[in-house]
Length: 262
Ligand SMILES: NS(=O)(=O)c1c(F)c(F)c(S(=O)(=O)CCO)c(N[C@H]2CCc3ccccc32)c1F
Ligand SMILES: [Zn+2]
Image 1 (cartoon, protein in one colour):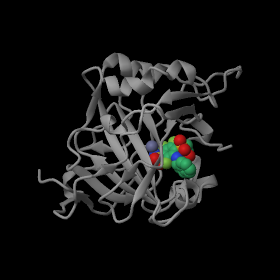
Image 2 (image 1 turned 90 degrees about the vertical axis):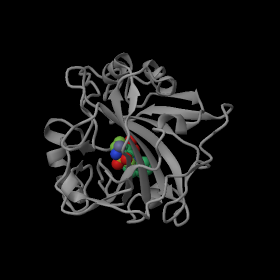
Image 3 (image 1 turned 120 degrees about the horizontal axis):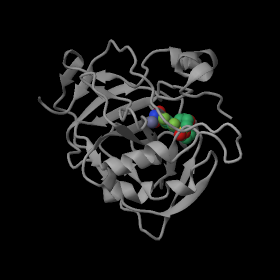
Image 4 (image 1 turned 30 degrees about the vertical axis):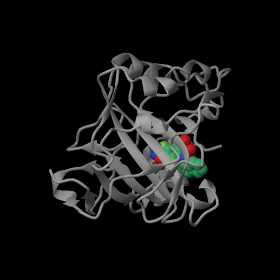
């Protein structure tokens, strides 16, 4: 089992001891600020294919002790990237009820409340996630920044099941739905850079697309995310709340491309 956490002796400052890439190059997440941004007119709007999965299909929601992840259908693909990338899973990062700033990427040093990641692997070159995860052109992650605002019925399709996955290794099956509902409406405005997984093993294998426009969930929905889940198993005598599961921003001396003019 992966022995790492976001806190204490196995926290992010120690990851590099067991997972050398975590101390390496091209690490994510990063802060987006003006002097590293460069407009690139060749960045096409993100095109999703096969995202509208029939509600007769199921997605599996799992608490893996680090996040809550949802399996996705490999018929879900991202076009308009150098290769065809097929969806593997989505998961979230968040803060806690007293500090609702748990996004991984930041804009002008500002955290958002939470962040959704949809992890895809290069299905042109590799068989599955595991064989793609450590290849430089292996993965593409779509990142959606989440802020507090209106109740979001699409996010509720995931959040309403948290009581069934409170503890590590619990899972539940939910009716599939169109995951595009979880994205902002502007798929043509995003930040683009080559980075890494933000958890161990931190492979520098991710083509990041971070949408400029955040989505909104309500205060109550965010509170549910911040208070429902545990990193520990149900029978663990020392329960650990699953909070603050975001990596701090990494030093970054490279340009980030943007598909939009200011
Ligand atoms: N922020 S992120 O997008 O970098 C990222 C995570 F933050 C995260 F938590 C996970 S995980 O699988 O839930 C737990 C750690 O592997 C993955 N999972 C990836 C990592 C390697 C791998 C292999 C097979 C399936 C999924 C993943 C991940 F890509
Ligand atoms: Zn993530």
